[in-house]
Length: 218
Ligand code: SF4
Image 1 (cartoon, rainbow, N blue to C red):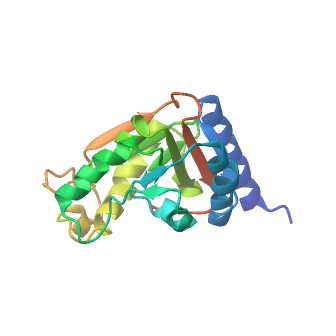
Image 2: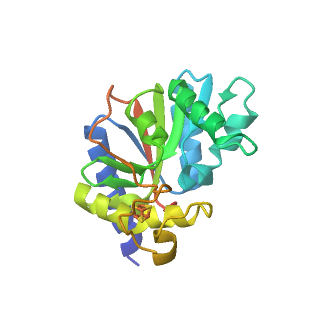
């Protein structure tokens, strides 16, 4: 039994981790979402000063269960930017304030084998935070997010992640929720507004990436 699938992912994830590290990201490998949570709680959190946290929309981050741990910590202030019963204007204002928190969690739409993060946002609060603002960024990415290069990342996002992300928000009225493929729309609800390619972390180690050997998120 030579475990070809397991060995494939172990090697591919390790190569990606090394590439991220050489691009000045702090990079970790987890076997599963529980392992990702353990890495955050035991290896990352004790090394950083955190009094306030917020997060960007990410199914992968939510799958780790870390948000529950943060909510249970009385010493950490949680800035809720997705709260129900709060007006859209207030949520947008909170997302501005989230750029000044000590720690921001999110996912990445794609991670290249050459160690770059590629993201596409509707509002820009997530890519804004990754780019500048919170002192620490922790990104969780399942193995399904790994692609060969930036071109493959953009293709993955526009042909798969973006239409599915639109579909999971039933209040949006974009053509892709019916066609299941990108129509490069001009809808007011268009979720594809701001691209970022994060080639390196600056300062070194500010962005921490936890790669997870599971298919997670979109
Ligand atoms: S550009 Fe418009 S149609 Fe294309 S994925 Fe984004 S929201 Fe959907």
